[in-house]
Length: 181
Image 1 (cartoon, one colour):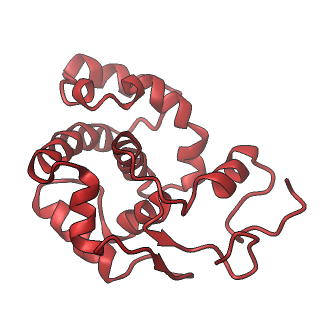
Image 2 (cartoon, helix red, strand yellow):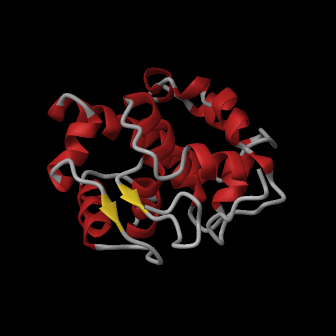
């Protein structure tokens, strides 16, 4: 696995990171459960590295009921305290509260558009964007602004740009990377 040239950000000492880079990042995946999970995980990245979040991903899945949106929307103070005491995840009260709030808004968007992906397509015209060495663009600005107007937190343009890369709407493999297109 290490004999291939990968994007410069990929830590070659971390098998989870290599696996994520090679098999998930920038690959279109518009499954609704995946879109939801990645939006929640990306919001926990704010101020941290994606590698930190990725290393805790399985623990997040356990702690957040395998990202069952219906369960997460019903989290109460007792569950929030449980999450705050879980040393296996990122224990930030603002991010935990935001994840519950964002889940409710995600569901409202799904009710409005039928699918969260339909919401995203309203901004993208169902096109993949190929660009490298950016952390925001006009698309991430627009989606971020709209999500914030709807009441979501921890969805700034940089987080949304990372999210769009994660789900494959923005394709950003480095020119030197074996996955570059």
